[in-house]
Image (cartoon, rainbow, N blue to C red; front, top):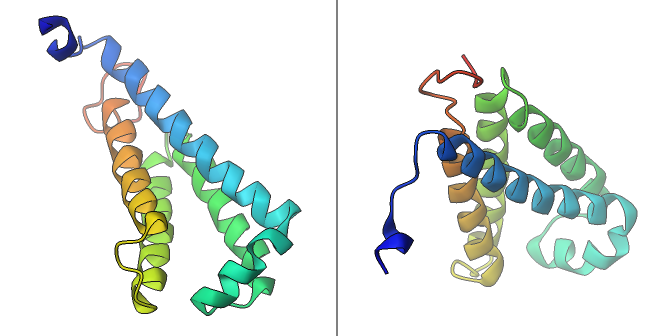
Length: 133
């Protein structure tokens, strides 16, 4: 039972951080691909929130650029900030129409937390060897 609660070793933290970062990035890129390749799937949801469906390519572009920055060494902090702002905008959009505790809001919150946990576990702040400086 105590094995489940054993702290990660120093060498395992960056690996766990990258796994977390890649998981979040894959989910966000999948969302961007749906926005680009099948915008009709999201058109009703966009109109329900109050945004015209024609904005989906711009939102997909922000996501793709944010994920690209997040996965690089030097731009990781900027990518975290861009993606956090994107997720925060999604939360605010849902809260504006009275869906403050809906499933999309909870997913955005979870992705935001995992985004920062992954980036911090990668060693981006500590300056560990092989991480961002």
